[in-house]
Length: 249
Image (tube, rainbow, N blue to C red):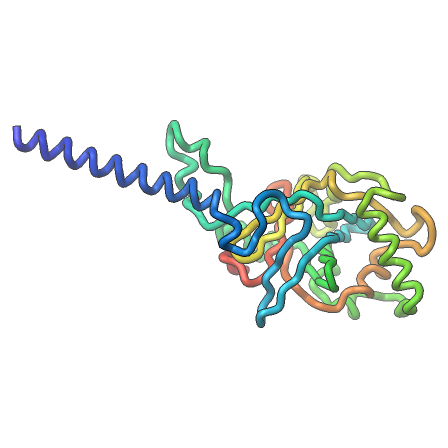
């Protein structure tokens, strides 16, 4: 009788422990954002913490892939915490409560497909074989003048708002990843947070579309001068790690 009672007590204690871990995992994904300096609800900017105490509030995200330039205004991004128990997603009955999370294995050298740069409140992600060099090395044309530079920023802002561009749905697969699925999400990871942007929030431009000045990859690269992070391909999404993060490249 005593052994049976001890068995029940052990089972009860184990159940409480599992429930405790479950609750911790759930609440880790639904933390109080105000304690982390984030407003409650969707964000209209990406509040990035950068090394050496620098901060950036990203309001425009640009992607270069092949000969195509994509632009999106940050409007309603819902941060997701990645600091949680990803393994619990495989548990029966309650596993559906835990969405897929990243781990270090998602960021192997062979899945690296590009680099990211910051200038002001804009983030540029350069995908493909030429990515990873400094913008000065990657840009092949002559540097653009101040007037043309200002006009290009204005046009990029309009493109991000949907004026003068065609909506994307997916982002063109980089040439360095033949046969890869066209990315449908661009996720920026900084600290413990993931900021996902759907590809259909982006608008497309190329060197011949819309009013002057034309927005081509070379001219766009010439606008950016501050390396910020590394881009990886994971399933059908581009994941940009911007240090510091809980994942190491």
